[in-house]
Length: 296
Image (cartoon, rainbow, N blue to C red; front, side, top):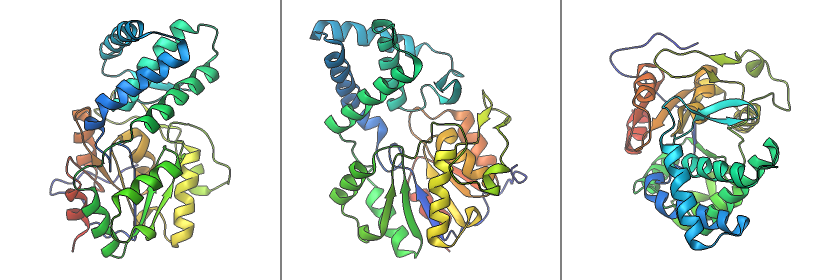
């Protein structure tokens, strides 16, 4: 589905629209990890009625189990492996919470277990909001100054992300729209029939990656489609920026978008190499590298 790899760098990128992920992309997931894990543990302890020693013992034990998972282990949603289990600190915390809930609430079905994990995640996120990457404000301001449409499309709740962006207060904030609850984890059809989505294969098997990648993420596609409709553009005129290949970038790339992987401590080297081989892809730890791609 991708164009032939190029050796001299990605194709020139002059997008009409830039779509940014939020957590781990505009925010610093690595810096947030200690506070988020602490908050997740406290929310889980409240749910299970644990005292402090029990929380410390059980969280440490489960965290060790998650750390020992093989590199190709997946975060599973509705029976599908949707991304690496340790792709970022949030998934690690969710994996710990899921393991402990499964052990201590054995009667929970899969749907209820996932709902409890999300409850812990969202409560922890409210308790310990994420810090921005140091260059996030500069990125947003220069993107707005370039004339691009700028949209934030995120799994997090719209209201919370809008509040964080308001606090950052970049120039042109009023023209940066947020679309939350993107459901990038969920594989399945969207609400509105669209030939672009219908043409997607169910999975892609890509060289160097540990697992097949599920592409048909209907809830995420719906939000991207709304962006195309609102801006009178399409995927070919879009740059999508995110920190998890499978969640943020795989489907848009196959649809024809330019993509940019923002790396952090947990990013798998093979994913960086794969994205850099794509004619419309690149990867870098710096947000400034996004701007370098779109400048004349």
